[in-house]
Amino acid sequence: MTRIAVCAPSTPITRDDAERVLALAAAEFPGAEIVIHDQCFATAGHFAGSDEVRTAALVECANDPSFDAVWFARGGYGACRIAEDALAAFHHGAQAKTFLGYSDAGYLLGGIYRGRMGKAVHGPMLADIRRPGGEDAVRRALGFLSGGRDGLEPSLAGERHPVVAFNLTTLAMLGGTRLMPGLAGHVVMVEEVSEYLYAVDRLFFHATAHLNGIAGLRLGRVSDVPENDRPFGADAVEIARHWCDRHSIAFLGEADIGHDAANRIVPFG
Amino acid sequence: MTRIAVCAPSTPITRDDAERVLALAAAEFPGAEIVIHDQCFATAGHFAGSDEVRTAALVECANDPSFDAVWFARGGYGACRIAEDALAAFHHGAQAKTFLGYSDAGYLLGGIYRGRMGKAVHGPMLADIRRPGGEDAVRRALGFLSGGRDGLEPSLAGERHPVVAFNLTTLAMLGGTRLMPGLAGHVVMVEEVSEYLYAVDRLFFHATAHLNGIAGLRLGRVSDVPENDRPFGADAVEIARHWCDRHSIAFLGEADIGHDAANRIVPFG
Figure 1 (cartoon, rainbow over the protein chains, first blue to last red):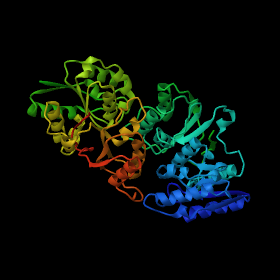
Figure 2 (tube, rainbow over the protein chains, first blue to last red; figure 1 turned 90 degrees about the vertical axis):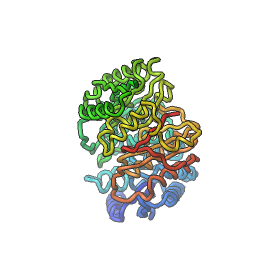
Figure 3 (cartoon, rainbow over the protein chains, first blue to last red; figure 1 turned 30 degrees about the horizontal axis):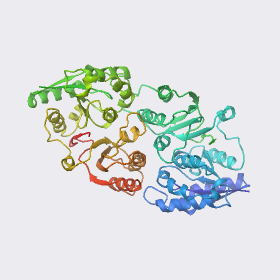
Figure 4 (cartoon, chains in turn yellow, orange; figure 1 turned 60 degrees about the horizontal axis):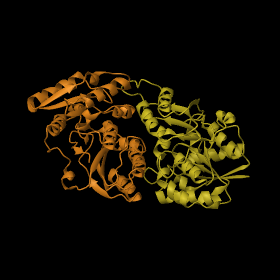
């Protein structure tokens, strides 16, 4: 039996989200037990409960030795507000755990990886059940947490460097903070959603300045780009190449990650 | 006679913008001569000409000893792409000059201040003529460039620390780059426009992590905040106080700067 704790360090999910995932898991993953912390349904302004409430739930899930994994419920924004305090309260119970999420959960993945406090993994979250094809995203996450390796990002099979994956905004905001892991020698995958291309360019300006010595960069999907009042003049791949060139970073091509149901799994390291 | 060169390191202006400002200057500032570089009207995708074209115009204006000031035409996005190369080509002709702008021009102001290459000043740009009340913004800029001091941000009068002012996004993106000046001991003013409050919070998370040792922070206007699907739960002042508290930064109150015609002038230093 794989025991999976779900908490929401950023924004809340609905009871309906939870019921749908629990039903899917009961039908298809009889070896997985999912325990959804009540904090996932709390609300406080933008967040799934106050900073204190979210911190307490995350620490409780991370330190409970009866769980094998902590699955982040949803992104949105808010994990960066609690990450430092929560990680400081992690103890040995967190060490052997897998922590799975992406997007805003990247602040936690970064800090966990930096602190070697458990296994940080970039992949689908519970709330992805809402997306078109979201059941497949949830199956991929539960399959991975149950020991399957089918959902791994394909380039990992041939990769000899350690790998990390982040939402580009999250990675840009991590740079220079106490949550930013050292990424020298790593392949860094990034993806983005709902940002103008000029903002993607600006994020690359910033993020690449913090990626000295990486082994290379792969670009995931840059999706739902809003239409600006004029064309930017370069697409996302050209933007990535431009900034990699500026910083002598090897551009390694595409990565099969993104804010969508096809988002593949990237274990850090 | 004060000779002012105008170039556009980010996005283009229109001939109409230029004519309106030249007419205002001719009528009200007979001691100022404004020379608008043709590059201000160039377009290449998002930008006022390619990176090479914008770099060349900025370097030409900065190094020409017959000009007293370089006035940035407009923000929008793009200065970060050319700032390092342009500043590397500045010579002694740039040393005695004033460089005036804000918003996206902050990348240049930051690099100029870091490199002690001239006098960086945060204040209205030519394209502010488009705003409601924009003539007053242009008058404030031309008055300052002509030697007047009426347009200065009011708190400067009682301030004993050196001061800088930035758009919050620009400051966040500067952190950790080769354009970021050392700001220990400085009062740092920030303003923002058209960002969700969750994004403002995220920018403060990041920017304050790069502001170790500053003398304090002042908050300019945070304007045109889009309405999100739910209230954030804190206003901009509460957000600023939260992150200042996290980093033991003194919150000094408001600053009279912003993306509007009332934007007051802040000479760096």
